[in-house]
Each structure stands twice: as structure tokens, then as C-alpha cells.
Length: 582
Image (tube, rainbow, N blue to C red):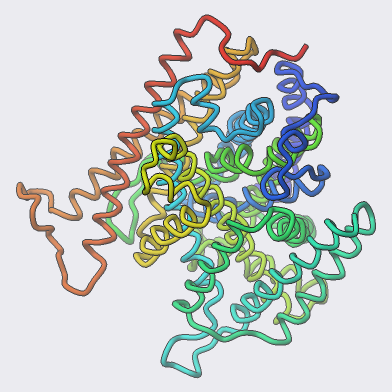
């Protein structure tokens, strides 16, 4: 099978979906181009800030395009390229993009509120509390997993071994640190001097090129542990500073790199015209050679490919930050549905790149990031770019994938914790009152995320996929309730939400079972002393936390889904003040 043909088919499907299916969704729900959006109504210069569609698209795209679109498709290719390809195309169009658009639409139509507060309005306070707790726990998993990924990507040396260095990683780290200052300079120029249009794009490109040149010229060689601390300090700043000062301009700059990476991958594939060396289909059950366990296509495929098909995290961005920057309702469709289609192109490109470098029907050695970045860096060298610059650029792009999602989810986690304790604040409960403070909520969230990250990326990633997809299912139910309550059609979410509930409840149940077996043994009847309680190691801590999170997420998921589904199938009267726009 030609990799180029596969890529072209996918791109045609995504373009058609944007102009046909997303337009149909917009027509079914209704928009008001003359309505005053929450960005203007509640403008505060921090979270509610009206921005041009291109700036909001940059934030949305940069935030949702995390590590998933690269890692998920490549890992899922173990089942064969066909099931992975079909899930990206079908899932991206009818599940993920509709989910992202729906979350943003519901938020903009409800004063820019997050999904948790929308659930309170249309379902009740209990549903809101459960959902906010679920969202906060999920945020901790993302912070832990992506924080470890970024620190590893920036790791320029092995502690205690001076000669063991990685220049590409050190350059990427240096670029990232300069990038933060560059973004703030651009933010000030855009805010104070009303920089916009072609001038804004020109200044952004000049600043970006200068940042890349300085970072490559002056790499920072520091170990992983130090970078982990630096990353969490940055997350604190990104979580509490105004959107216009850091996150919005940083996302705007990141979009150039990420789109550049996608264009490079697509053009490189078109020029090389590779053949898919992966097997078309390896079966519904395959054995994991590393662990000796059997993995099943259902549910593993559908939680492995999250970003690039459907991701609950996207709803937190759509309703948590992006909706507060939309300055006209007509911008919602290109920002949300359009950003998801762009991410799907990256997911298919990653799958094709992996297929092109595979041998004997199976993936090559290395992590998904290594497989993808080395291949695309090879494309760049064919265009005349020096190898060291190509490698540094690709490493920077890979770190940007994780970092742009990381700072967004840190901010969203902080907001979820604040919202959870908002009502208790009125009762003068000192703890609740403290946790509604954005600085305290940020510190608590980041400390919990930091502790989890010390267990390593691999210890939390399996749960991230399941929790992410369960979040998507819960959000789709909530959106369906909102649409029905306000006399709009939500039928497009029924099949996706029930399918994802089946996938995620199965996956989480399997996670609980595997964690119990790993901790206590298949034949052990005592749960007081774990089987592998090794002093000085993270065996008990990481596996115990994984078991705790799996049980907590499964229980919360059942409770939220039950509460929302009861409302969806029993609600008959319009509730709230938001009426349908003709």
C-alpha cells in the first residue's frame, strides 16, 4: 500500500468533513454572528480576552496537539495500519472534532463556563462536583505524564557522566527557555501596540527564527531532575499570568513550528512516496513480547489513539480557555473543528512515517518520538538543512507538543480545583476559601502532579488513555443534555458517547485487575502487604497510585455517567436561560 495514497485519502476526508459535516453541525445548533460573546461580556484581561480567530486557533491547536497524535498511532500500529487508520479518520471526524466543537459551543452559549459548571446548570450540583473532581484527577495524570516527557526531552546529560551529553536535547531546552521570553515580548507588542494582521505574523516569524538561532548556538546541558523542577516552576507562572501575556502568544508562535513540522512530514512523504511496510492487520489479539501478556484490539486501540481521534482533554481546552477568547460565534467552527482536523493530519502522517521505516511488517526499535522525529529530521536534511539543526528543530517540536498541552492542563486543573470549592468558600471554611485562591490552587495541583511524575511516564500513561477517553464520553453526554434542554439536536453524540463508555469502562476494569495482580499476586488473598514491597523503590508507590486512580476514575465515571444519562433520558422541559438561536 502506498503511504502517499493513504495520506491523500485521509486529507480529502478531513477537508470534506470540515466543509460538509461541521457546517451541518453549525446549522443544526445555530449561531448568532451579532451576539456579544463572553470574551467581551466578562472581559477581565486575564482569562476572558477577545482575540482574533487566528490567535485562538493557535491556542486551541497548540494546546490539543500534545504527545498523543504522534505516540498513539505509532503504538497502535502493532495491530496493523488499517485499524489505526480507520479509527483516526472515522473517530476524528464523527467523534473527536464534533466533541471539541460541541464543548466550545456549549461554553460560549453559557457565558464561557467550563463543562463542570455547564453540568451544574443543566444537570445539577452533584453532577458538577463529581465531574470537577474527575477533571482534576485527570489533570494530575496529564501533568505527571507530560511533565516527565518534557524533562526527558530537555535532558542534555547523564548525571555524573560528564561525557554523556545530548546536544539536540540541550538545544531544544535552550530554545524553550528563550521561547518563553520571546512569547512575552510578542504578547506585549500585541497588547500594547495593537499589533495585528500581516505585521503580527511577520514579527512572530522573526522572533521565532531568532529564538531558534540563539537556542541552537547556546545549548543548556542540564539533567532531567533539574529540568523537571524548572518545568513545574514554568507551569506555575503559566497558570497564573494573564492569557495575553504568555500562553496566547506562546501558542501563536508554537503553531508555526507545529504546522511546519506537519508540512515537512507531509511534503517529505509526498517526495519519498514510501510503501507501508507495516502489516495491514495483525489480529484482534496480539502478544506483547516485552510483558508476555495478550492485548486486545478492543479496547486497547481506542484508548491508545486518543488525540488524533477523540480526546476528552480537548473539551477542557475548548471550554476552559479557548471559549473565553472567542470574539465572534462564527469563529467557533474553524477554531475547534478545524484544529482537530489539522491534528488528525498529523496522526495519519505519524502512522505513515512509522509504516515507511518499518521492516518485515513490524515497527523499528525506539520510542514513537524517536521513530517520528528521526524520520522527519531526515526529510529536512534532504531539503539542505544541516543535520544538527534538523535534529534540534525536531526535538524542539516534539517538546512543544507536550509543553503546550502541559501548561494548558495545569491552568485547567487549577480552575477545576477552584470551581470545586467555590460554594464552600461562602461557608467560611478556611481550607475551601484558600483553595479558591488561584495561587494556592495552582500550588496544590502542581505538587500533586510533581509527586506522580516521580513515578515516571510509563507508570501513569496507561491510565491517561482510559481516563482521557472516559472524559470524552462524559462530556458528550453533558453536551447532549445541554442541546436537548435548549431544544437543539444532540443525536450526533449518541453513538459516540455509548461506544466510548463501553471502551473506557472495559479498559479501566482491566487496569484495576492488572494492578491488583501486579501488587498482590494472582493467588494471594491478603491485601495488607504488597507482593513486591521493595524498600527504596517506587514499585509500591507507583503501582499503588495507579490502582487508586483506576478505581477512583472508574467510580467517578460511573456516577457522572449515571447522573447525566438519567437527565438526558428524562428531561422534558427547557431549563436555564440560554435559548435556541434561529
